[in-house]
Image 1 (cartoon, one colour):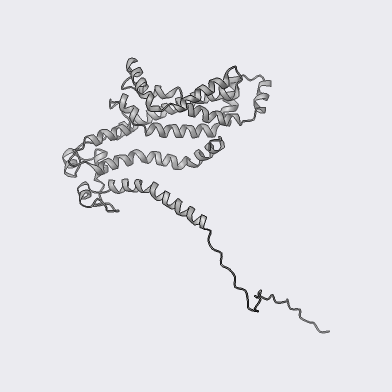
Image 2 (cartoon, helix red, strand yellow):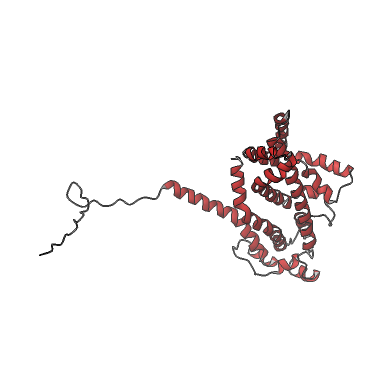
Length: 317
């Protein structure tokens, strides 16, 4: 008995009409994707470069900056600017390093910024959540009319309210106090109410109806059901409000001239004014700016994805 080997048929390469093999066409990269990547890279460079320039200036010697201002690397690498900002040098040493002799009480101003931004965030999130629940989940006469009137607040520039609020805080004797800093923006925010209302409108009402059958009232439903289901947007709103309050400058400039309530952003302006005009402490100012910006950068990096997802889910395009 003989075994015959079966060989698989050989697949011949496709041939052209002239009998030769057809060359495979190389796929060309799509032009649109290349343009998109170039745009993204350019946008990242434009966004990140200022932060790099702040770091480069903060790590430079203040005297060497004037001799080589266009260098991409720190000129005369040193940490003297951070030492001047944190008050680790004497006044004579700071002046010899190119500073003005002025220092920043970083712990005090950080405390002021945390108190101001923290209390304002708690008040804004709480009152906005209560108002959004009333507009989204409660039924009462004139609800839509009142909400439309409230939305007109989005059309009023915030700068128009600075002078009336300043006069009000002055009449109440709340200048140079945390209450004067917080109260004008703590009770009303049209955007925050709209933001939370859009999310609450999309929540299912079946759970609330079941809770009503079990005898739960509006307050219990709000705290036990609606607010836990709105946890993502509430955290997002808290982060955005905290960042905005931390970076606020003009309103604290009007009502917070006392060092005991002066936030860190306003202290940076005072530190800059203390520098002599003929030889400004550029390195020290950039070091102080970096100290103020790093906490917010870390906060946004940690929660940036949550913010984007919550805004998209809330229907804001």
